[in-house]
Each structure stands twice: as structure tokens, then as C-alpha cells.
Length: 118
Image 1 (cartoon, helix red, strand yellow):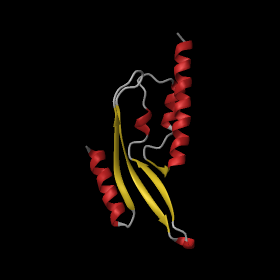
Image 2 (cartoon, rainbow, N blue to C red):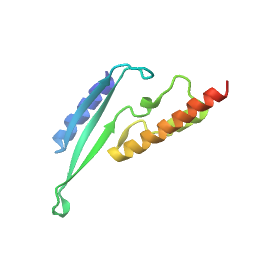
Image 3 (spheres, helix red, strand yellow):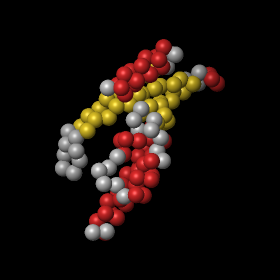
């Protein structure tokens, strides 16, 4: 509830300050090996008016970023990695994908270590 209000307020403030911003929500049904879920983020388009170009940069704002990577039974290494993530993410799509790939790789190692430690 609080994050919904905070996200809405931030979007309205960004729009008021001249940015093109929107609150985006997505959800997906459960499939084999993947639980259902939902995800909310703020999408901001920033236009670069300097230098005569009409270059647009997209920024993603995730108000609850770190919690997206929580696991039920993580290893201590995975917990340490996710603790180093920011609680709020503001960055490009490319930077977001880099972080997601890194954490997913760490999660696969986390799963492997759990199976070999049995």
C-alpha cells in the first residue's frame, strides 16, 4: 500500500517536473517451475535536448528492488550478494539486465551448492 502511494506520488512529481513518466505493472501466471507473480516499476523517458539531437533515454525506477531477489532458503553467499543490492534502483534497461543476469547466475550457483551439500 505504501509503495503504491509512493510510486504514484513520484510519477506525478516527475510529470510535474516535465518528465514523461508512467507507473507500469505486469503479472504472470504460474507455470511449471515458476510461481505466479507481479512486478511494478516506474518508466521514465528523458529527452536530451542538448547538442541539437532528439536522443531519448529510458530509465527504470524500482522502489522495492532488493526484495525482488529474495529466496526462501538462500545460501550465505547469495544473502550477502543480495544485501549489496540497492533497495531502490534507478538506471537504464541495460544496467538492470546486467544486475538481473548476475543475480540469476548467483541463484543458479546457490541451487547447485544446495544440491551438492545434501
